[in-house]
Amino acid sequence: MDVTPDMLLRGYAMGVFPMAPDRESDALEWYRPLKRGVLPLDGFHLPRRLARVVSGGAFAVTSDRDFEGVLEACADPAPGRETTWISGRIHGLYTALHRMGHAHSVECRQGGRLVGGLYGVTLGGAFFGESMFSRVTDASKVALVHLVAALRRDGFALLDTQYVTTHLERFGCVEIPASAYEGLLERALGRIVRWNPEVGLDALRGEIRAMAARGRG
Image 1 (cartoon, rainbow, N blue to C red):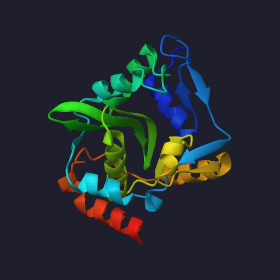
Image 2: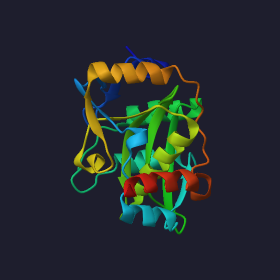
Image 3: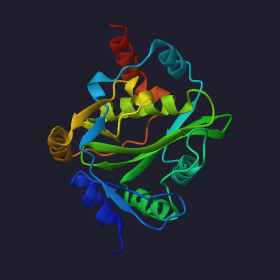
Image 4: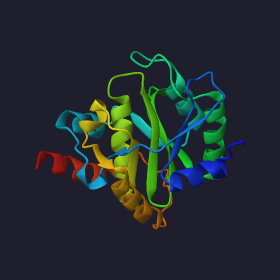
């Protein structure tokens, strides 16, 4: 059966997501982890050092300016990640979701060069994080901070990270049972929320200050 972008959205709404076995494969495998990673939007931990980097404007942060560039960078080999699950088929499906308004990227640039970012899928009040990359120190972290600030500002209810990693644990990511995740997902899907591409520092400064203040508390 050929997988379509609409089928991907139905899968996300049911709590499953696809990956390819490797970058060269044309196959897709569906996953529904028994334990799910989520990053609570009201419990995000913004370290002081990173807060200074973000507020200092070291990166120009945008959204949806170069979705395919972010997707391709996430698929590239990196130290500790010699192969990825982002295949040509995945690339095509998520590019189609982007054209439909359901997949979005956050980009970090320095001197006009794309140096970090992330992408994911939106459905109702849920953001399903897919992958991130960094070519310079802190670039993906800054993208994540801007993402969380934007989701908080706009009324999103769920940031799904699929799995918990040591990297994400630093920001408050937790692992919850699938049954608890399904409850959060149902509530998030009931929200009517639109992705706002204004994710620069000026647009999010107030939200980022609130996140930093919570981290100091």
